Image (cartoon, rainbow, N blue to C red; front, side, top):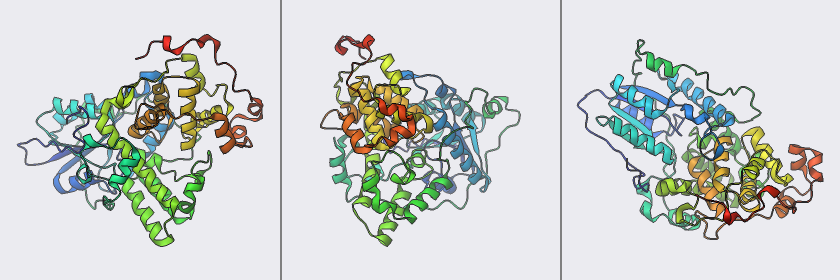
Length: 473
């Protein structure tokens, strides 16, 4: 799989094999479901034995780039719940999820070589790191068939009326181009899967990787209403569209709190417990029975935004992480350790921002409007490198999606797909619009925070120098 510029979004790199029996390995990623999963469908048709593997890399829990872990405690809990739910479902097929506590680059080549794997399946992941790992594994085991199949997007690449290199520079242009592209219906779960590839009891190396490690963070005491898994995602989907909430979505989608103020599909979509096509099917059924309006159209537009960012990530690959973005325009921001830490710990001079960050830190979730507000604060008021905010969201959010997260941060920082440049939110106006009585601030910070009205004083005197004097990457 070629990784330069993301030119191979739909790549089925099948190499010849002399084995007549297909022992398949399915490397799970953002596709933790059985229904509407084209990989399981292909396996049911072409494989004689199967091993299903998810890799949890120990490096995820060490501070990586931009002073953040790859996976925080909220994401981890939702992920483990989703994996356990998928394992329970696969048990009904005589299968199971093997959670390997080691990096994919280290463990998968070993498993492939020691268990006679002849074909490896992987979802067509939009993340640059995931694509690199996939490429490394193919290089280490060249005599195996590799198949990447789309599981996350509404459209296949070949359905689009343009080449990936010609992806529209803005979402509006993209939406107009795909407006008449047919969205394939979601498919049912397979009725059968091949038996498991037998584990070797004497294989101490693999057994050590399968044992629950002591270094994995504990996740038992989370204050969170989201529960991972395919069944839970389907429950939320059915619950939302069995009500009239979809007709009011546009009116309430910018609310800062409340379960019914948005669809809340994003955690299950990000982990692949739900597919975007399943959401579209439910939406179209709702419109058929209850009627369409501007709100139901907005839900589809939100899915298309997600679609755009996934293609955007495939096209630009590692450029979605670059400080100067996809066009090489460096923003006038820099690294200010004290300001970034204050933003993370909800101790900035802005009570409204602090309340939103407290919500994120206590739940692993924040409304879309809240994310825009706190991101604008970090970039514009605190004048900090946007990547530190994106990395912190990556750590904290249970609905973290690489393409959506980094694409949105680039958009707001003025280095991405927004033709207007950076988006600066007037914090006082945002508070007056979305929390005029201070109820949200009071709920998350207490009454004393409402007394903080002066948001115009100088920030951190220790950092009061011209930001252009600071080194930038």
